[in-house]
Length: 179
Image 1 (cartoon, rainbow, N blue to C red):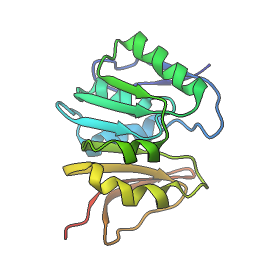
Image 2: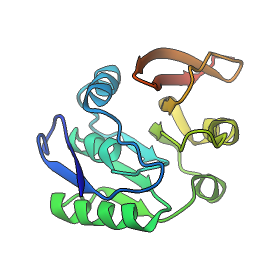
Image 3: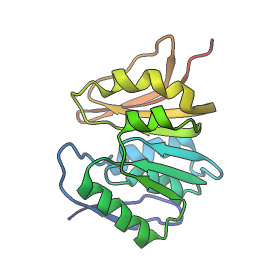
Image 4: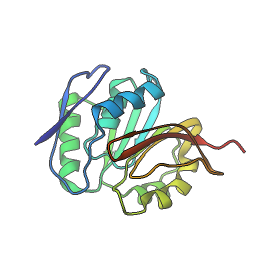
């Protein structure tokens, strides 16, 4: 089993174990630290959606920092089982873990989230399909975190407010563009 360590909060230094799975790329410690510096260290009361939960590092990190709820989606069976096991290990009752496709979830669910994490498999044009759907799921003043194999630019719908690059990974914090 592979592992990733949570950076801060109530579960600081706790280890999440996860299996090898095609396309599973855990967000690195350094990138997660940067992301949560951008979001603020304390997410008290925030609701989060992790569209491609994978290891669960982003959702569990948010919960560790007092997010009220994290909905975590994972379609692949082995990573899903690891997510459920890590949920039990941490006692993360605020984690809503579902075996579901991201587009299917967005079509069926109308909840709005304060923070959405979007780290889809690369080279499958997921962002082209997801970005138009995400605006209606983001709370007023909500933020969207995106990892991609390329740099994103602001457009008529989304404003890139922070970005960085680590190795081959481009990471971004977006908000809805002001009309």
